[in-house]
Length: 186
Image (tube, rainbow, N blue to C red; front, side, top):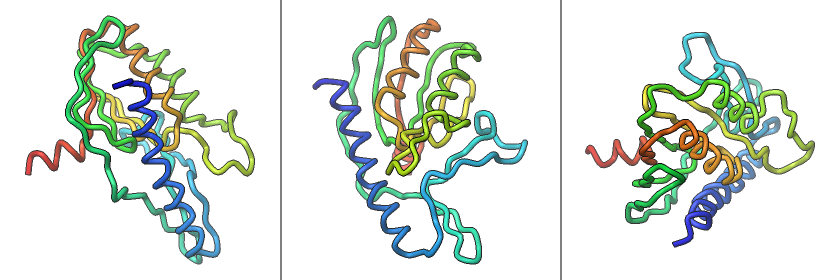
C-alpha cells in the first residue's frame, strides 16, 4: 500500500462528507458559514486558544454545528518507518488524529510555525469564495501526544507534522483516534 495514497484517501473520504454536510447546513439556514475561526477562553487546552468550528448558523441565535461523520474507513493496523522513526497507524479519522511520540518536548518554534501555516490564523492563505479553507480546525498538545482535527487541510499537513517529530528526534510515532480508542475500550 502506498502511504501517501492511503492518507490522501482518508482525507478525501472525510472532506467529501464535509462538503455534503456544509451544503446541507447552508440549505437549512438563512445565515451561516463553514470553517469559522475564533479564539476561546484562557482555560482552553487548544493551541494558541484557537478553534475552527465546522459550521456556524446565525438565524436569530448563534448555533455551532460539528460534523459527525457517518462513514469511517476501517483498515488493519499499519506498521513501518518514517524517516528515522518507527511508525504505526492503528486508526485514522481525519477529524480526530492522535499522534503519540516519545519526545520530552516538541520544538515550540517549529510547532508554532506548522500551526501558523496549517491553521492560518491571519487568513494569509484565504481565497475568497473558495469552497474549502484547507486548514486544520484545532490542535491540543499534551505530554507525548498531539491531538489534531485536520479539518479540510491537505494531506501535506499530516506528513509535515510527522516530519517535524522525526526531525526532533522521536524514535516512535503512533497514530490513532481518540474516538476509536474509546470505542475499543467499551
